[in-house]
Each structure stands twice: as C-alpha cells, then as structure tokens.
Image (cartoon, rainbow, N blue to C red; front, side, top):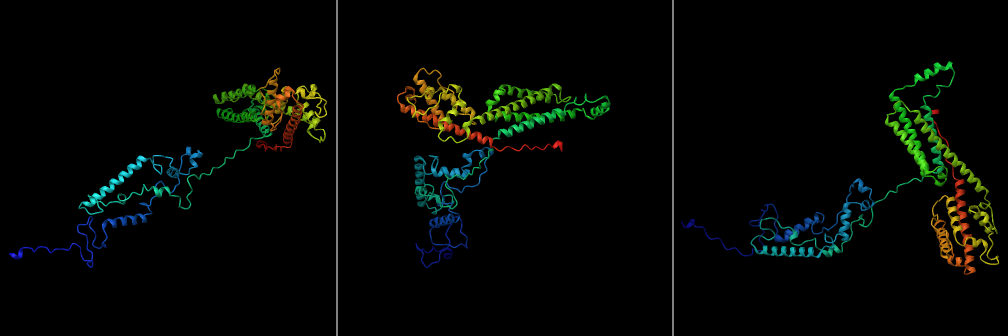
Length: 511
C-alpha cells in the first residue's frame, strides 16, 4: 500500500545548466512544431527581430516606409479634364497627393506641417501604449503576446509615422522620379491656319455664284419651250416628256439647289466678314442692306424646304435667288473698279519712288498734299534754319493740331491696318490748352500706331515761347511724314508683288 503513494517530485534548479540542450517551451501559444528549431533568446526580442527582418524583406513597408510617397501611376482622366492644362500638367492623382504631402499645403491634414494638437494626441497615444505594454510585462501572460493570445505588432513598440527627423530630411532618392514641381505634361500646340487672302475669297465667291447660276438654269422648266419653230414641236414634247415630274425627283432637285445656294451664301458671308477694307464695301452697299439680302435668301430656301420642294422651284423663288446673285456680282465688279482707280492714283504720286537726295523736305511736302483735305491752302514748307522768323506760315497752319489729326486719320484709312484712329479731339481751339491737347493726341497716336516717338513741347508750340520749340516741331513733322510714308509704301508694294492664287478650275460636268 505504501508503494501506491507517488513520490514527491524532485526539486528543479532555478536555472538549467548551460550544457543542457534547449527544449520546447511549456504551454506555448500557439503550439510550436516539433521540427522547429528553438533558440534561447527571449520571445519578445525574437518577435521584434523577426518582424523587422520580414518588414525589410517586404520592401521596407514597416518601419522604413516613408509617409506621403508612392510611385506615380498612369491615370486616365475624363474628357473634360483632358482639356484643362492645369489638370494635365500635374501628371496623375498620385503625383498631386505626393505634391501636397511634400509641400505641406494641406496644413492640418498630414505631412510635415500637421497641427500641434494632432501631434500631441499621437504622442499621448504612444505613451499610453507603452505604459500598457509595461503593465502587461507584470502579468503572468507571456511577454510579446496579448491577453487573447494574438501576436503583438511592432507598431506597439515604436511608431514609424511620427519620425519627424527622418521625414524632414527626406529627399528623392529613387532614380527617374521627377520633382512634383516639374510639369510632365507636353502641350501640343494647335496649328491655326492663317486667314485666307482677299483674292482667294473673291475667287471662291465668284465660283460659288457661277455654280448657283448654273443650278438655276438647270432647274428652269420653261427653258427651250418657246424657242424653235413648229417643226421642232415633237422634239420639245419629247424633251418635256423625258423629264420626270415625280415628288421624289423634286425633292432630290430641291436638296441639290439648297446645297449649292447655301454654299454661295457661306462664301458671301466669309467674304464680307474677312474683308480687308470694309469701308470700301460700305460705300458701295451698306452692311444693313447686305445682311437683309442674305436673310431674305435664307427665308426663300426655308420656304422651299417647308413644303418639301413640292412641284419644284417656283418662278418667284428663282427670281429672288437670281436677283441676289446679280447684286453680289455687281458689288464685286464695282469694288474691282475702285481698286483700279486707286491703283492709278497711286501710280500718279511722284513721291512713292525715286531718289530724293537733298529734296527730302519737298518729298514729304508732296506726301502731305496727297492726303490733306485742302491741299491748295498749304503754303510752301520752308526750312526753319533758312527762314527769317519763326513760326513759318506752314508751321503756323499746324499749330492747333486739327490738320495733323485729320491727316493721321486719312493715312490710317489708306493703310492695310485700320487701327489707331483719333476719334476724340477738340474742334474749338480758342483756348490754348485745347490746341496743346490736340498736339498731344497726335504725338501719342504716332507712337501707338506708327511706332514713331516725337520730341515736341506742345504747350511751348502753342504759346510760341521759343524758336527751339518751333524747330523741334518742324523736325517732328518731317520725321513723322517719313516714317508713315515708308510704312504705307511698303504695304502697297507687298500687295502688288503678292503671289496670285491659281485660277485653274476643273468642271467635272464638262468632262
């Protein structure tokens, strides 16, 4: 009976001998496999080392991960976003996020410039986590494990997010990665063709009018019915019976007429809007009349389409379109006649060409007489150095500035660039300050329109204070005439030597 009583266990030493081989842990959670190697290092250190090694092997996602960075990926933008340069210049949404994270523009929402309250809250949370981990070391639970048996992560030991020293000194180290401020968007320049020349537009308008005239002639039912003798009555009957009169034929014919007349209206509109000298057109026919005629032809075409071209074109509609074509043709003919008259007038001006060595003042005098309103009233332009007294009659005529302003406006209208006209000036020059303001208007217009800077003391010229002011005024008029004359002459010479577009046109119907 005494043999059935178990013997008390033998006392175990507090620390095993170093020569003893390690054995499996007692009550391991989770249970260790029998074939797994066991080391004598503590579980907490092995856990932290393992997590660090695994984090490093995974590409540094753990403690080495940098906040606010991700390699930009290709982003597909919407159609509305593709048309905005500000969106496409940023490259991708990831690029935008990285840009805000690095620059700290989103203050209080992360990055280096986070608000102080959030930093303090993160620090308090870190202290509480450390205190809880210290209290867990005092419990009988195995170190490195939570109460429910789950394995503790490395974030409870140290938080890599709030390492301000690393984030503040962090820079781009990845090759091939551009800075956020570098624009990766390559804007494709849109090619805008230059506006067509006036000669090309006129040729296109004449061709469109010729096509419209031909279509009206083809749709005329009465053509050829009254021509010829009685012997040709059978031929006319056969010609009339050969023409189909069905509704389908009228619709096809009406659509063809509609297309051709619409093209003619479009060519006329382009010619009116892109004309180089619209004042010349207004002298022949007012803009209001031209616009009303276009609207009238559009109403005629709209009425034809509203009745589905039933019965073909009516005679009233044909007469309206034919009258509009004749009016446009007459407008073009009158304009060409005016251009020929202007060209003849330019050829008669002797100051345009030739060498005027020693006669520069006479050349500019002839230039002024060509554009002055009353050339017969102009006295001779004498040199102030040779004149006995100042001002000379010529300079005294331009003292109030009105004649110079009219001369400037006339030359602006003659040039190919119609801008810089002086529209507001004083006509009542009884007060000296009004004359001075007119001269200032002329001086400023010469600088803005003709790019000629003049040195004139307007008030001294009006008050006739000194002869030096009159000499400067005479030199300014001479300089202004020379600059304006050279610019206008260059424009006319370029217009004459301009390459004419080919007038070759292949008529498919005639082949």
